[in-house]
Image 1 (cartoon, rainbow, N blue to C red):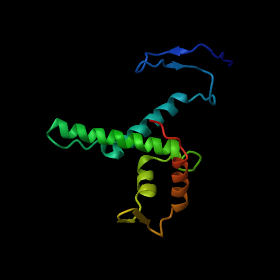
Image 2 (image 1 turned 90 degrees about the vertical axis):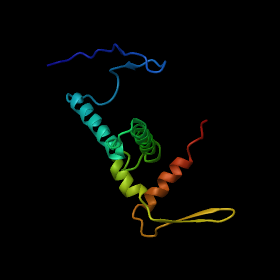
Image 3 (image 1 turned 120 degrees about the horizontal axis):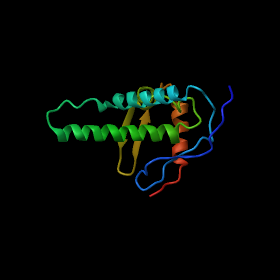
Image 4 (image 1 turned 60 degrees about the horizontal axis):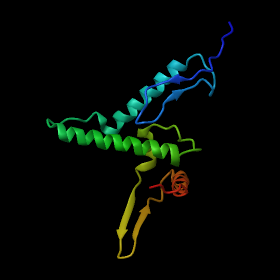
Length: 145
């Protein structure tokens, strides 16, 4: 059965003053795109929950709201780390829990002197080369204010 591609773009409501448009001109063609999108969405929701978004255990709205803010900021930082620091590595699509437990939980000793702050990382850290690569990629990014 032959299908015909529609080259028209889909118009969506604007988002924060920005135009949102969908087009059918990119990526690999697959018949299970809906399932792939659903799986990605479920993975993002699981990541958000793994960053403590489900812990709204107090009786006060303000404290629960602050926890959700922290969780949202943590998710944005993890996504930026994945997109900018881990680009081109095997961990570019790793889940937030994996990044937190394997990449970010490092034993370290911190010494503060008058002129410097010394951070001594554990010698036996298994992902030292990957962490150095991520650090180099993040430092190479231009600062934008």
